[in-house]
Structure formats: structure tokens, C-alpha cells
Length: 261
Image (cartoon, rainbow, N blue to C red; front, top):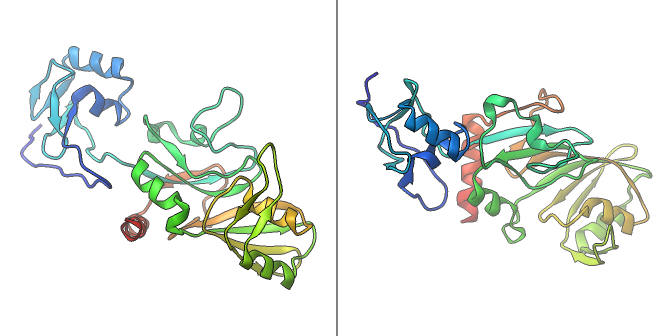
């Protein structure tokens, strides 16, 4: 194998050029720190074409070429997946009893450090962004940055014009599951046919949409998020499935990130 070309990566936030070899491999799904150390000691890791014996060696993640068992390691540090969360799954990285969003990822997509950026409650469905890019997730989720999240809602009773005005003014949320009453920012409510509605939020308080409708004397029967900022849930992506973001989606996410920094 020839290592004459250089691979560069794009990172959001500050770039840390030097990283321990075992940390670098662990972050790219080659096992725990202990397991990646074993790979190095077994002589299965090359850096710039030379077999490496020290797992604590510092490598330049922008310019060094790393291979495991003769295959070059993909150098991108951050990954981004679109996940269609089904009902009954919790938005968490791990849970001893409940099925989590990360449990739905195919084995080949899993790696240390992944988490769902933002939450949908267990009974809600729709778009989740799964990533290991904490800086971008923080920027997109911060209420003061006003990144929109769009939901389709099925209600027990049809929404009315008075509800639209109440949402637009902001309201006092009732207590829920130990969470005290609290104020929420204005939101957009669009009344659709029958008992359907669309809601746009720019913050994410606990069970916010359910509590907003409860404050109006209504009940949410089903809640589905179909958009998060510039990212829209692919209609053909079935519940429980996921895929990496496309190049166009990545550009849209990057533009949203740049606009908030």
C-alpha cells in the first residue's frame, strides 16, 4: 500500500491536530482503548506505511495516514446520520431496560461518542440527528440561536384560531412529570384539516408541544417531527431506519452551523 497522498478533515469548532493513536482508532470504531492498544501491539497498525508499536504515539490527524490490517482508516472525525425514530424508542445513547435510538444503528455505523442531537419523547416519532459532533449539536439546540423544529400533530379535538394566537403569544406551560409550570417562547401553530396541525418550535422544553396543547384544553394523540433546521426527514426512510446525511444535507447543516456561530 502506498501512502503518498494526504487526507484532510473538516471539523466544526477548534481543531486539535495531534491525538494519541489509540484514541484516534477508538473514535473511529476500532474498539475500546484497550482493544486498539492490542491492535497496535500486535503489529496490525501502520502510520505513514511504517508499522507502529506505541499506542500512545501522537499522530497528526490532518496529515498522517493510518492503516489497520492494510486498510486505510477513514480520517473524518465527525459523522452525521438521519434516523427515523419509531414510537416506543427513547432518545438516549444507552439504557439498561429501554430500546434506544443508538440501538437502531446498523453495526457498521456504530462508533464511540455517538448521541442523538436533541430529543423526542418515547411516544413521539420522526427525525433525529445522530452524531458525535458536540459543538454542532450544541449550536443547533441552543434556544437563543432559534433553529426551527417542525412537527406534525394529531389532536383529540381540532385546533382553533384562538389556539394559533395563544401559541404566537407564548404561554405558561402546566406542570408535567415533576417539571414545574414554566413559560415558553412564542411558537407557530398552523391548523390543518380535521384534527391535524403543524407546529414550529425554536426551543425544546420538556414535552413542550404536549403541554402547550394541554394548556389549551386539548390533547396530543400523535407527534411527529419532520424537520430540524435545514434537515428534512426523507419520506422514504421507514421508521427505525437510518442513513448518513447526503452531501447536500451536510452543506445545509454546515450553513446552519455557520449562521449560528
